[in-house]
Image (cartoon, rainbow, N blue to C red; front, side, top):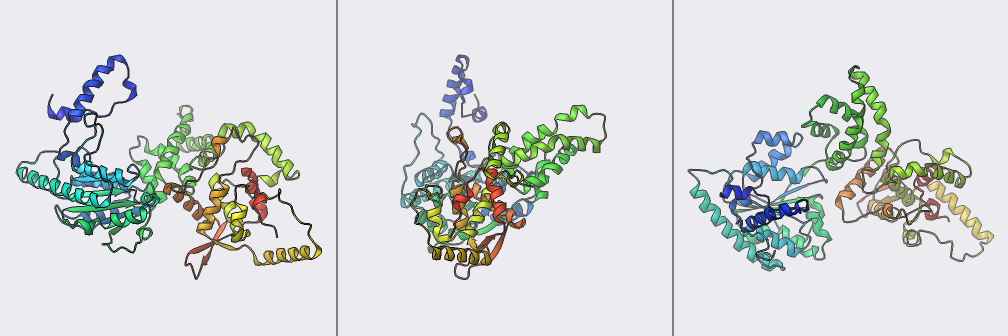
Length: 538
């Protein structure tokens, strides 16, 4: 078997080939995979060469960022300053940087802090790639070097880089006259460190982060390029340790027109898909602009949108659009609720318990049927965010710890003293003063803290059966945090929440809830959330 055939064999086997007839083939593939010796070609990303025009057409809305990164990388073998690529989740940062290196055909070492979730794993992942070491059964799936300390990592990294750079220089000299496909260009090595924001959740993040940013000064090797990728801006990594600041490259959020161009790519029937985007893109962009979430939602919705096409073969295009929209419209609201990681009630459960919940809501509100229903659609997480803003404006900040404890804000079990006439008068005067002052302002940190507390409450009689539907908030998930901030921006645009200026001492922006108590109760009843238990009454 030739060398080229060995490289094309897939190195990973799956459980779908567990039959007895395939056992022999799997053993052969495993032996070939274990006998495969990595070469310098493994430091190049992708297969076939990608032209610059194909690179731009693959990312039609990121031409400015692509040209900026290519300019910063510079010509072949030219030294460069560190680059810091940042932007929201699912804005194309990692995909674009990898495809740029596929276009340039330069050697790189890629490590993501999402998979390398500890310093030891990160250090060993970098060293394994530089030393062309592949874990397999022969070596017991062990790493080439055992490394846990940053000081040891620096020494091993410098030795590995010098070895690889020397081999690249020899390889470039041999192939200068006759260049073979797949061979890396140049003698520089680029280290790409992805998901940098996750390091802040590590135990030793206060020392690891400055160490990562100081690698350029520690190594002092012009043949090494450093590229950091993060969901947060460079300001969030401020440190007292001095180092060369990387050059920032910002990936802004996709606009509605950008998403239209992205989803129209590689569509067989562009006219039909364009009519579909005209229906779904605008309402979904108000909720999220993450391409991965929209792609998941649109794939199932487009199949639902095309269901009546067989019956509309002989009608005009405009009439077909109207009929498709009337058939498709009821499914939009259900899909909007299921986009975020804060899930709503399952659709089947909503249908089966709809009448029961409506009657229960009517009884609790004293027979007012219209009071518990909203006049507009709002996603589940946006409702919780709106309630959080209302509570932050109404309640004193000093009572957050007592209201949002494990008792869910209920203090009915505590023994209360009988109020005197004087205390009742003081209470009434305080309520009137609070009414005259209006809602108070609050910082973003307090809003997110209240949102975390109330979104974990389960309401309803079927607590055990609905255990899987508990709303979850993971503070370490930066993707989810960007969704919450996006919804906060939408609520501000709708004037449900306004920015109340910045604090002169803290310098941070403060917000203010503008909804009435009746409106907040409507939203709370639609979620079965016990809002009165969390309101502070003087």
